[in-house]
Length: 476
Ligand SMILES: Cc1ncc(COP(=O)(O)O)c(C=O)c1O
Figure (tube, rainbow, N blue to C red):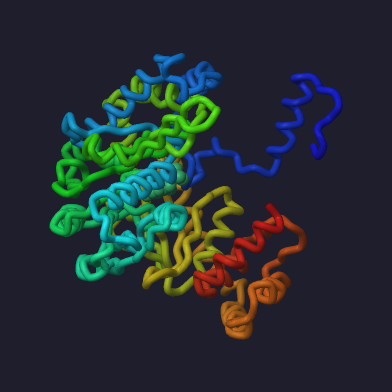
């Protein structure tokens, strides 16, 4: 659009233009999107759209003007707290997503430590390498040093020895995941939280992706490792509604063990000429849409609705895992605790598998090698994928078989040679060296991501981050 047009246009034109822009977007309704999309099904989706738009104009900052939003938020928080076996002392708020909930947990910990551990001037957070990058972001934003501990490479759960060794005199908060996004495994939360408690520090459980799902699974009688407020030492939990709560983005909950801890979440300011700002979240003005839609979906589904989804998803996950292990040359990493897992291979370049599967309409998330975890493709299965499991296995079999027959398309040796050649050079030079070999012609990412992902996977993480910053800063 460029500059603002002098005159407006018709509703029809606006909608046509928008539709045209989506030409290159993936079709989210195919049931073949295996990550980042939580489609609750048509009826629930329609209800979410209706409730979201009905509460869209309301500003959740002004609960005095819109008491309905305050009530909806309290109801949602209470439902999630109940699932997470909270007692009456637990309090919380809705945020815009997992990242904001995690930011609030770390900001709260930092301010809590300033009062409760005033001798610590350089606060630290200990977290397994499988913890979400949002914690590293929070550490970066709030001046906390992040110390990553190892995971055991059989189950991809936090290695307790490594975790314990990483806890030091400056640690103010430690973190575990239930489960981690990358491998879908729950950390040994009971043991980790006990170590944190012994030291008088905080312990956050990242239940962003699994908090709701795993709690309902447990209530269905499944054997789920403990991770919630029933575990002594757990002081805060994040749980996203906009993932396996199947509600529209942006909706998450951050829960604190009690009001004494949540005190440090607040930001209140009455020292300007402006209105008084009172926030327990990083956002101030925010739409009531996600809050109302989350309330509506919880109410519409009830526990039974979620149980039905979880039963079908767990069954589909079992079928998928069984199908994958039968395909020679690929494997599933670790022991996933819910409907999320990763596919790795000693024999094939997984990023080529990803490209071929994408041509068949499947969307997974490529993940790079890190701390002993090999490069892999992540799958988060949802209820929308359930009817398509057999087709997924068939396509995966065919793709692996064709790679076996035809050999690799990406020359990994050549990629390694280039990476060695550029090592130690400034990031701009690295960029110039790799552009020709990854098929980058303009500012768009290449259609075939295999070569780019292969080379990114070979780079050290620090350089990779610099390179991606440079690229997106140029193109974004
Ligand atoms: C375990 C976990 N924590 C945090 C996040 C961040 O959530 P969001 O993308 O809503 O900010 C995710 C996202 O996938 C996640 O899986």
